[in-house]
Image (cartoon, rainbow, N blue to C red; front, side, top):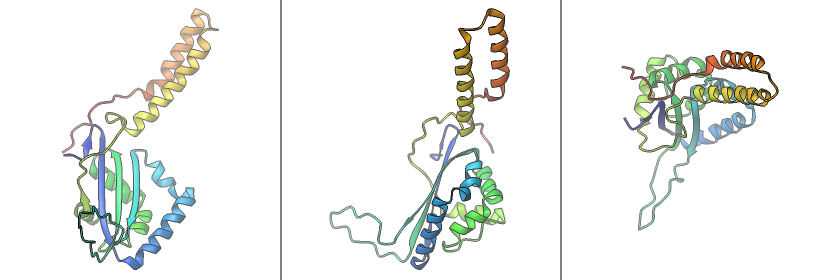
Length: 198
């Protein structure tokens, strides 16, 4: 499947909205962008590497020239883009369980949105509006977002040990090194391909 690259899965969805609803959603996005505390639940879901919503007005799609006629669309469109770690089911389950209020606030302006709870109906909806991603960039495809956070913790601990090492005696360094290993042990994971889940 083209949506998977290492441990990273890309999900994109496009949903139609009646044009009179677009200004309401733009206002909601403005508030969400300026009130950082409203983003905290999304930030706390540490397996999400990237999530973005974009509104494209019905007259805002590009024309490639060469006599291409402008499209006569009835709806504006809400595009959702995300990269995450784990399976599609885990991602949608977490969205439904943790972010249901925010999802409903954003997607309820889209046509035929059933709500993010119950999760089974929400998954059916996402399955209908999702489209495959042919290409996307991920800097560390064999590492999850948590792997990267752990690597920063290991590096910080190592830098601290290195800065103190020159001033330590042999036995003191042995103790410092043992403390370093014990401190970073929980952060030593394994990168590589994600396990296959059926």
